[in-house]
Length: 428
Ligand SMILES: [Zn+2]
Image 1 (spheres, protein in one colour):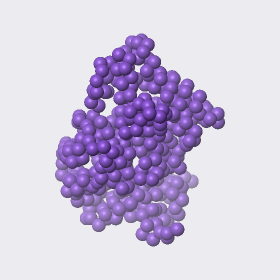
Image 2: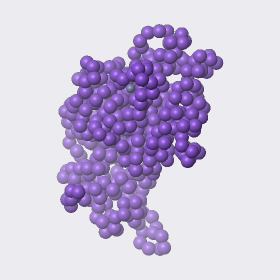
Image 3: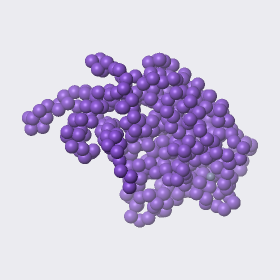
Image 4: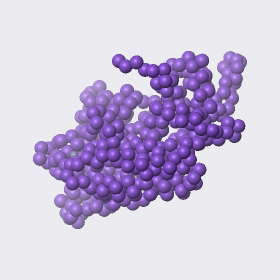
């Protein structure tokens, strides 16, 4: 095993301290930071001093010590230390959020998107929307604070290699991978850019800010115009080789079956995603026939859900079958991962109640007996801001991990007395 240099150990410890404060959610004393990190008090004191000097942490109060000892100062993340941008690209909408260092969304902007698009056109559009969001929020001041951009998109994404093996948002000739998507955006904006699969992003957001906080093993399922899975295993996002893990939405359930967006036939996604439900509505004569663009698919999906709520038995059957198929699949995901929690973002709220009961029954039936009654399934719909916030948390994680931002910030001049934010030059 390669030995870690003292610089790497120092970065790791800085990350552990930042991450402990971030995950705690409320201010912590130095003694409390020592518990989850396992670091000695002298080490915590030294590391927090560096983080206070750089501006990443701030002292926010004093509390009486237990047992009448010395009073303890409380430390928190400095929200204005740096800000990050999160972008969610769906098949029909682009959402940009500006998030502070503490993970609070300061500004959101959404715009319609017509996909599939060529890479250069999508980069141009994304850069334009990010710049507009930054301008809305205060322009130059925000630009100076901006430390990175995270981008969530559906499909097979190798975030480390900067390769999108396939995504329905890109117009390509056949199964051609899109390379250097994040590098192209970074070149325009002048800050680091990280691209990641949307379900992975959502799992990360749930771990950082949501229902999976403090849990180590969680499965997050995303259902809209695709079927995504994000797997948090032993506290880490599981990406596998080339970021291609967890693509169980493309599990083949029927050889030579329905055409999936990914190019294969018979994937589960081709039976339960919104486009597949609309196709089944068309085949049943409940919706007008013909190929629809992504935006129109969502409208048609809503129309079919309304018909089911009004008691149309054919429409009801389509949603019940969707629930059963999803339920069996989620039960098998539980058998594979043994998660503490499953979260399903079920897309349009109007339709969830139509498939929830058959889904829960089928999931229960598919799970191995020891899981039954032990693995909660939370179903809801968070909206596009949650995804963009997740994309922002990807950037925060990368910044925390590298601790580069701390080293970078400490090279800049900043005004300690007024507790001003360290300034990181950008070219946005
Ligand atoms: Zn597929």
